[in-house]
Length: 439
Ligand code: DOR
Image (cartoon, rainbow, N blue to C red):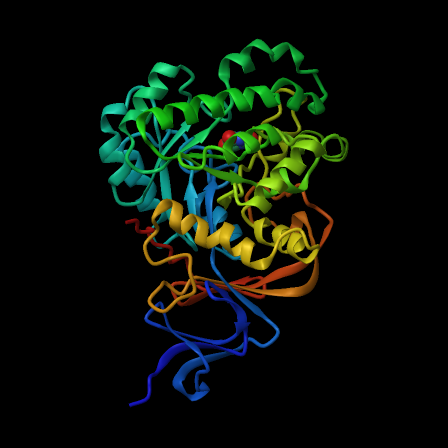
């Protein structure tokens, strides 16, 4: 009996672990069943994919979807619509909701809200605090847990572990790789007067390179002392990147598309508070350091740090304006445009968005185009010119810092566990997202 399949992508260019090449790709029962030259008669549905490029679905390991409590900005459903419109098939969502995700009950509440309502698969970080240190072993292992996230410097919300004693207590307890927002709270507090009212270009002056470097060094030092793995989120400075390149044994590294793409002072002149983010978007010298880390292998993953706020919240006069910008829907278009401009290879992009997160976080059955893996795919047209606009953005807050930006390279379709959830900008069917599984 010849093999039969549910879905066949015929004639596409597949990017997987053995390189880039023309291959057919067959899916059965939600998993990748065959790669190679496959008879079109063998499948229930055949998608003609010549001219298209098939990537493993993007795993965005840093998004803020704001549910529960802040759903005037976003919720799990709207956030995940943006995800799948942008080729993202799995997200790790952050704990600074209201209430904070710091208990088993809060985590299981998020999982229940997300199950078969989100359009992509999901896991949720649990906020590490001085109060739940003794529960860390349990919190790391509960179904749907992406592990522990700690804010060493304060940002949106109330989660904060700014003293070394409690930070060390947490690091001593973790067994999975935990994620950290590294800015030194004492230095941020001491420099608050450097904020110039009404001038968001003073944001990176206040939250300076040194604040980030101090916190990153303290974190990595504690990881080394206790032999633990730490993930340093949204690296924004050349100095941290240089330091981290010598500490890969302990620390994995995330950069964001906005730190790679937007640059001071231009972004503050053009976008004002819409560019305000923690850690801040900085100058060209720091951005060059991030690209160098991406080129030399120091960077492990790209995360969008999708952090929506309403226009009203963004338009308060600085510094009352909220920090954060959308990003989950634009991660892939922005990075494909960088690929087309020759700033990184397609293979390296896939390493950063799929293989990297799979390896770092121990995701089961995701992040690769290989037989037996979940059929999570981002199908893109590398040659498609498009303009990113606010109108396209599915996020409840309805804006992007890239409004009117022309890019080359665009997501055409998103497949989650073998089901087409987005095709040519349309979301198909109801949310069927499930909990990501970890080793
Ligand atoms: O600018 C930011 N906004 N940085 C963060 O770390 C949090 C985020 C948010 O949740 O708004």
